[in-house]
Image (cartoon, rainbow, N blue to C red; front, side):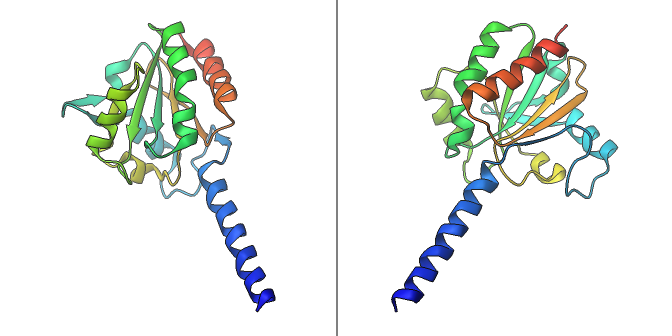
Length: 183
């Protein structure tokens, strides 16, 4: 009995670690969307033409933020690596108010509009909180969060950043991109 219990416990531990690692992975992609049925042109077009819904129900497009380096940040309120990076992203919006915009987009996996509204009202971040009502996440194959997409000041796709390397490293990585691509 003890041996069987240990096997079950070990299996549970391995599965738990695998699940956590999938949601907290830290890799980047700059040229090819991995494991997607879209080709690179379809992938970038979907991102560059993306539209979302504000918490008030209005439609916004990525093109509405031209002139700024844009970060589309897929997140949800329960995702600690997602929300842990928010103070650093806020700092960047303050350092580069005319050059950087955060589109904090919930895919709606577990959170709904009310969850996002509650979070926004209880946190003083100058982000554009948005809902992925057009299911861009499904179109481009987002399977875990945090999932950040960077666009240049003309709205052109730069790169993807998956997972988190911790708040400080996430801040530094985003700052380098803003510095490189801002006008």
